[in-house]
Amino acid sequence: MLLFLYSWTEFLSMVAVLFMERDNLAKLSETLLFCMTQAAFLCKLTNFLWHNKKMVDIETLLQHPILTDLTQFEIEIVESYMIEVKYLARLFRVLCILTVAFYGMFPFIDDDPDHMLPLPGWFPFDIKTYQYQVVIAQTCGIAMGAFINSTLDILPTVLITLGSAQFDILKYKLQNVTKVEGGCKMRLVKRALNKCILYHNVLLQYIGEVEILFSNGIFVQFAASVIVICLTGFQMLVISVRSIQFVLLMIYFSTMTCQIALYCWYGNELMYRSMGLSEACYMSDWNECDSEIRKSLAIIMERGKRPVILTAGKLFSLTLTTLMTILKSSYSYFAVLQRIYGKSE
Image (cartoon, rainbow, N blue to C red):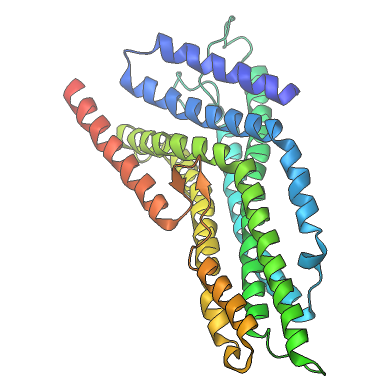
């Protein structure tokens, strides 16, 4: 709660600077850059706290017996997915740590008198008198905010990855649904097929709960990322390439790009993995089964034709196409700012 109040105070302080520096395009863009990042973080945090009960529902679904009754081979599938997302999450954390470290040191290694603090903001006292105290307070706030913000990005990424792994397991089960041993083979096949149908229903419910919990927050993050990436590029244009601030902006740009790439990459993976159910049914020995089992497989194949696509606010799909759209939009706005700045100069 203390961090929540501090974050709102920091946000309102930057809004005040936006109003006071509205005629200075360079200063306005720099402040808006941090302001949009803070706004996205606050919206994501507020959305998560508002729908926090959904997290309990997701945990309950993950403990469903149909999802936990896995063979050793199926457990290895989940572990392989988790190892991959773990390394990418660590890379994102490292970028966040570098960003926080550079922002904390920036006021002391930059000679520009306008950059006495890590973040722009309005204060009702002389900043020069309390510079060290404010720098420490802002750096601590940035560090805690970056940790929570990155957690709000990594958590849905991990949950989406679990969904992708579960779809791979479902495809494996469907492909081998007819390969049972023992007497009354058709009865055993029907039982295994019913488990696959239940598995699919629980998995779709799980993905739906994940989308409800994080969809609005991801939408705000996407909208803010378009502006932030654009303004970061613009700031890199108006400052010297040899300056410390340029290095800082490069790290910040990489962090923001990695942030939205995590969503789009793993959302695209989920869509791709969910598209193989029809093929898995076809690869089973359906021709050796009776008509009832064939009909059930045909129904699953029809359901599998519609891929599972997570959305951000029901407007943007979490796919690589959306990632390219965000980057293209950021560049378009960057070109407009560049032209306006060129005319003002």
